[in-house]
Each structure stands twice: as structure tokens, then as C-alpha cells.
Length: 250
Image (cartoon, rainbow, N blue to C red; front, side, top):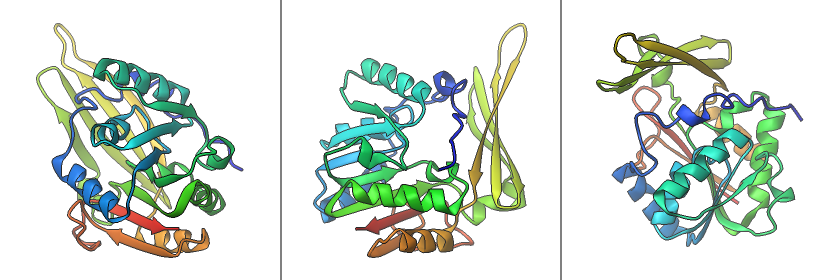
């Protein structure tokens, strides 16, 4: 099993700059409300919870949610965020390739969101993670994998992306693509007086697209896989879709 390097160790405290975990996308909330209602979801595990944004969302929606992540630094920031938001969510530090070693409870939904699964670069690790997620599902449970990497986002004209921009702070993503990997260079610019400060962080993802997910979910033994291209659950269209969301049924 390939060792995962914690790319967020020095970045976790600044990960949420420019936004709060309480900044909820109404369309995303509606997506999960409809999907979870259709599948009778009551319990949710966010197995790459990061700083806790989706744990916050699901908690506020009334679901019994737990979070896990391999990064101790991200979990520490999640705890700080939950304290500030005055909510309680149980957190566990673990690798999402080994969930069954840490969770006896079965969940109605396991989510792995915001381009988290592609931190794994090899097929055997990706399949192992999907198998592990399936292992902690209830009999009719679902897995949801979500990412912003799409065919459209990989076009040359989208190599630079302004993510946050206000009078005090800007964040720019610069995408470096080589073979099957995509490195996101994160440039954080603090607009200070008398000087401006620039910090650089980076994360590297495996480029996974719709046909890759169809293959990997099949290899992991899922009975059914649906791929949609946005929160409105429209079909994934390589030329135009802004998100790639995979829903796998056990």
C-alpha cells in the first residue's frame, strides 16, 4: 500500500482563508437532500473530511455524521472550526483505504469529496479505497465521490483560476499537468501595507475522469454507478460539465 504524504501539514490552518465552513452552496445542499432522501440515508461518513465543511453541512441538515481524514493537521483545523460553529462531530484519523479497521458502525452513505480520492495515484490504491468505503456501508448504502476536475477544467485556457479575491486576500490556482498527474500550485497573496506577501502550497492529483471512475467502481464491486456533471444531476458532458460527481450503489 503506497504511503500517503500529508500535503496539507503546513497548509491546514490557512486552507479556509477567504471562506467559512458555514458558507453553504444552496444547490449542493439541495443535491444531497434529494439524493439522501431517495436512498433513505440517515448516517453519513465523510472519509476525507478535511477542515469539516461537509460535516458541518450534513450536521446542519440533520444527519448523524462522522468525519475522518489521514491528515492530523486538517483534523485539528476541523476541530477548531466545529468549536467556533458550536457543533459536535466525531472525528477519526485514518486512511480511507482502511476504514473497516476503524469503524464498526455501518453508514448509509460514505462521501469522499472535493477531489480527495485522486490524492491516490495508483489503480490498486484507488480500488482498495473504494472497496474499503463499500465495506462500511449498510446493505443499500451509497458512496459519493465529487471533484472539480473535468475534461473542461483541464483545457489550456483554464490553467489559471482566481478562487478568492478581496481587498485583503487573493488565492490563485495554477495547474501544472504532466502525463496522468495534475499539480495545483496554490498562490496565496496577502494584500498588506506596506508590503504584499506571497505563499505557495501545492497538491498533486491523479487525473481521473468519467471512464476511469466507471472502471474503478466496477473493479471495486459496486452494483451500479451513476455519473453526473453538476448539482442539478444533469448528465456528465465532457465539453461543458463543471463538476464530476460519482454515485455508487453497494
